[in-house]
Each structure stands twice: as C-alpha cells, then as structure tokens.
Amino acid sequence: MPFLELTLHCTESTQPRFENALEDVGALAITLLDAEADTSNERAILEPGVGETPLWNTLVLTALFPDDSNALALLAALEAFDPGLDWTQVQFRQVEDSDWERAWLDQFQPMRFGARTFIVPWNHDLPEDARGADAAVVRLDPGLAFGSGTHPTTALCLRWLDGLATQGLLGGQTVLDFGCGSGILALAALKLGAARALGVDNDPQALIATHDNAERNEVGTRLAVYLPQDEPVQAYPVVVANILASALDALAEVLAARVAPGGRIALSGILHGQEDELLARYAPWFDSLRCERDEDWMRIEGVRRA
Image 1 (cartoon, one colour):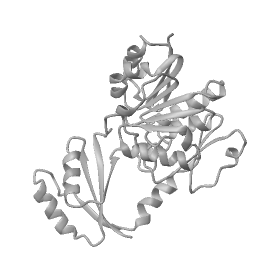
Image 2 (cartoon, one colour):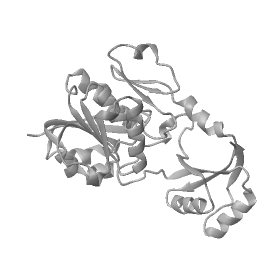
Image 3 (cartoon, helix red, strand yellow):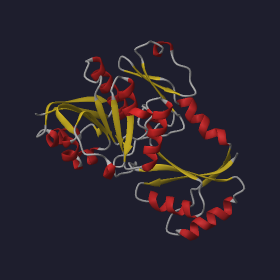
Image 4 (cartoon, helix red, strand yellow):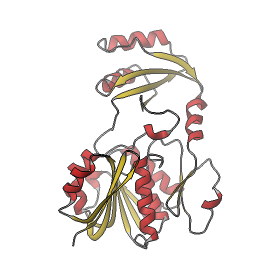
C-alpha cells in the first residue's frame, strides 16, 4: 500500500504545533528524528523517559497520508489550521509501504553485549556465536522503533546486566525495569537467569510492546508490566532505570526505595557532564557508586546501603 509522505524541519519548540496540525488534517503516522544525526545509524532514536518525550533541538518530522491525498489541498488545510507556522519548506513524495519498513529492517542487525547477551531481530538468523547453550538471546520485532539496543544508553544497561550474570548476582533474582520501553532490559535479565521481572512505563504502548515481546520470547509468565501509578510498591535486589537525567533526579527517592538493602541499581540516559550531580543526588542511599561511559552517554551504578 503506497502513501503520500510529507517531510519538514522544525524545532523542539514548534514541534507540538506542527504535529497537532498534521494530526488534525488526517496524518496516519508521524515520525520524529534528530535533524543533526547521521541517518545511517539508529542513534537518532531514543527511549522515552518516564513522564517525558525526549526531543532534539532541530527535528525532521515525517507524516504519512493516504496515497490518494491531494498535496496542495493538504498544504492549504495546514496553513489554515495554523497560519503562524512556516509551511513553505514542506516536501511531498510518494512512498511504497516497504520503503520505510525495509530501511529499518536492513539497519537492525544482531548485536552482542558482554559475554552472553544477544539482541537479534525476528527476521534474522541466529549468528553462530549466539547458538551456544549459555547464550542469552532476546528476539525483538524490528518494527518497534524504541528500545532495540543500538543506543548507547541501552547498551550500557545490557552490558551491566550481563556483568551481573557473569558474577552470579542475577540468577534467581527479581528485576525492576523502570521506564521499560520495549522491555529489552527486563527480557535480557530473564534470559540471563533472573527468576522474574517487572516493567514500569508511563506509556501504555510501551507496556503493550513489552508484553508482546515477552510472549514472543517465551517469558511472558515471568514478566509483569505496570503504569507507574499501578506498580506494586516493594524493594528489589536489582533495579535498572534507563530514562533521562532530569527524571532520574526527580525520582531519586522513589528509585532508592525500590532497591533492597545490598541490592544493585543501574541508572542510564545520562549525558556526559550530568553524572556528577546525579552521583551526589544518589549518594545518601548508595555505596560503591561508579560511572561507565559509552560515547556521550553515562551509566551510574551502585549498591544500596543497608
């Protein structure tokens, strides 16, 4: 099924107005990408923070409309809906259904994190080194554009979980994945030997994606998902939160209370330069705080004080 694709550039401040106008005139789907990112890789795609939608300073906004839509009529309707926006740079083109889907499928290849953890798309054969009996393989639907493991924030958390498993600190434990997105971290923990996992996210679509991925990976009975207001309040031996620095700061007391004495936490979604403030923020509750860096992103980990 072909579509009429509309593309424009906007800023973080004008994005909501552009998106509202496009939805009003019947856009079937809207995609946001970093205008300054290298489009040959997926670093432009970030996992949503709890209570936030992370955006970039300048964005490429793409909207899909039915193939029989009239481009000039759409443009006139958009200008009428919000004449204060600059619609002069809008570009239209006809795209086949497979154009955007194939581009994502081709980019998403099997990935290895640490000693045993592999993230493999459903449409790809298992690589040779992921066929061992001790391999922890998570299969993901490449159609899900968040939480695929390619972003450094996710990679940092996957390597941390893999390291816990190597040290014998994950087997039989219950893991909380706070801000679960696609559920990739909870799934990896289960594949690495955790007994149970809980995923928490403020986006209902993320909970659906997490549940679907758990079923496909045959761990659905061991993973529960909740909105933040529905999450059962308890302490866990392992907690991972891959959200944003601002959310990690605001939720410090909540996350600290979720970690059992002697339990371990990993915090990610932190840009280099933001870590010192968060180290100080979490110091009242955690010992052995340390940082790990991947490109421009940081992971903080620590052990809950008894």
